[in-house]
Image (cartoon, rainbow, N blue to C red; front, side, top):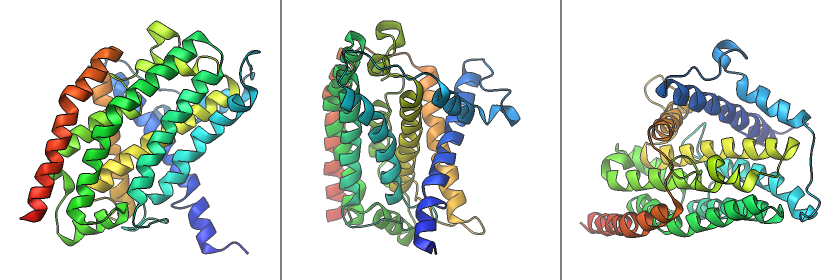
Length: 318
C-alpha cells in the first residue's frame, strides 16, 4: 500500500505537480515575452497555446538521438539526466503546500546554493564532453559566469537567514509570518541583487552568453538532440521554478495562506510574479558580452551585496 508520504513526493506537492507547474511557467514566460515584443507566442496547441511546452517536450522525446563520435559517451549520457533530476530533488526543500517543506532541515539553504553550483558544473561537463568547439566555448563561458555571480548571490541569500536566525528556507518563511513582514520590505537591495544574479544562474537575457545562438550556435547544448535535449529543457523549466520558489520564499513570504486563499495558491501567485519579472527583463534587454558581465558583477554587484550584509548585521544588532 502506497503511504501518504510517497504520494506527497510523487503527486502533490511532489514531482508531478512541480513538472506541471514548470511547464505552465514556460508557457507564461513565452507568452509574455512574445507580447512585450509585439508577437503572439504559443497559440494553437491547447487553449491559448497552453499545451505547447508539453507538445515540444514530447516531440523532442521522439526525435532522433545523435551521439557525436568523439564525445565522452558516459558523460554525454549522464549529464542530461543529472540536469533534470537535481532541480527536481531540490524543489522538495521549497515550501509549496504549507509553510514547511517536505524536506526541511537547518542548513537546506546552503544545500540549495550548492545545488546551483552543481547545475553550472553539469553544464560545463555537458559542453566539454561534447567534443565540439561551440560547446566548449559555451561551457567555459558558463564557468566564467558562475565565478562572477556566485559570490554576490551567496552574500545576499544569507542575509534573510541572518535576519531570521535560520539557515532553513522553511524557517525563514515562518519567521516572516511570525513578524508580519516580508523580506522584500526589509531587504530591497538584496532582492534586486538576487534577481540579477539568478538571471545569470538561469542564463537568461542579458546573461544568455553561454548559449548565444548568434555567436556559438546553441553554446554548450549544440550537440544534444532527442531525449537528451528534452531533459535539458525540462531541467531548465524546473530550475526556473526552483529559482522563483526561492525568491518567493525568502523575500515574498512564501507559501502562507492569506484569508481564504490557501497556501499553495499564494505560492503559485508569488512564483508566477517572479517568472513574469524575468520575462520582462528578458524581453527588454540585449545580451551582454562576457567581459561586461564579469566586470559588472565584480565592480558593482559584489560591493552592493557586501553592503547588504553589513546593513543586515547592523539591523539585527539593533
